[in-house]
Image 1 (cartoon, one colour):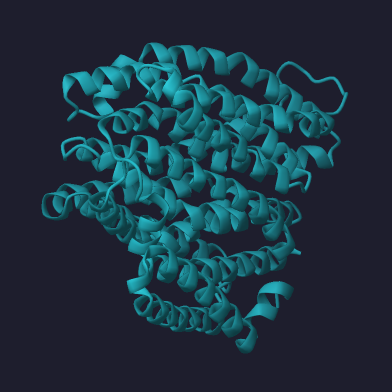
Image 2: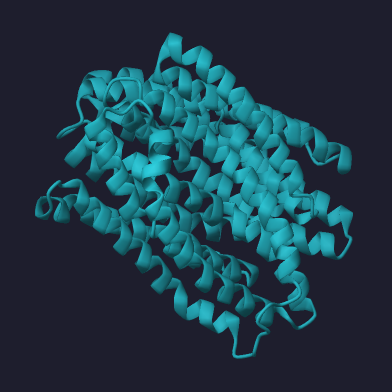
Length: 492
């Protein structure tokens, strides 16, 4: 059952995202929205972008459909071992080149940094680039386990990266000068821990069979991987543009965008990514079997699950934006002005949350269909829109304008992919159920606003705890009363 796969993936991803939230709380306490943390974020940008590209979707979307077909022929293990051999040879070379070229690409990412801040960012980037080795190996291990129906352990692996960063901020920072180097060490240790966690089950999935140096199916993996990576890199280019423009704004602008983006990615990473992760193997199997009816049904269920999770997330986070940011981050080096800026940025991002959830889903559908170039085209169109709106709105609203442009660009991408997918395989949107989801979300948002407003005199903690609990309870009750909960559970 699709919902069962989604739940297993979401449990692990939820734990990962919650520890990621704890990581950001710890970093905010130690470093706040400071120039030093701005420099760290630019230094981490390329490895983090590659983590999003390779870990979130790229490698899995290219490898799993080909692996499913090879496994049906009894060649799955040979293909996996051959692909792993390529990674072990190529990744260290990539890490070395990336570290040596830090002085070349960091000035492009943050052209507005003053000289001292620029030097610090270059040094941090050269130290952080080897993280890509651990990220890529963990992504391969996770894709292999997903193809075998194992979703929990791969989704929980990033917990170790988050814990490493928490340890680096809280315990190691005071041992280094500058303190930000402690965060660098913690990040690298956490990345290595991810690989070690997934190593035993991945070794069992690889099996003992010998593998040719270059398996014939590697060509098809490469043909799928290149447009998949290119499309996701275009998505990450949105963040690059945001950071570059924010580097000309006051100190802490990149940091407040990053804190807001972390909260934006919480429902996206737990819910939308879990739906997409569970859908991809099923869609790949349906397409391999030429079963369009089953493909359409799985896509329809994925669309409804995405709507049922993203709509309340957009509305709930939007209503509680300032209380949530204040409750989580406003302590230590993170002050009230940082809370206000971060909350405003979060609202801008949230306007595109549902759209990006749909992009996750539609991209996986095209990957399963063997058409990875179409998500690339959609991402490129969204990038053009984002750049144009960024240049316009940053002059008016500063970092809020950058966040709002990102949200608007997501809808361009989602609408483009939806139209193409509907032409290829129509009939997968069940409009009456989607309308019910939206109505339930609006009623929930009204209830959350009422509760939060009534408790505003009690402080952020009361608004958040009461608002979140009442919103979840009200929304679950509305889903149950309308029959949507049964539909989501049974796939009817």
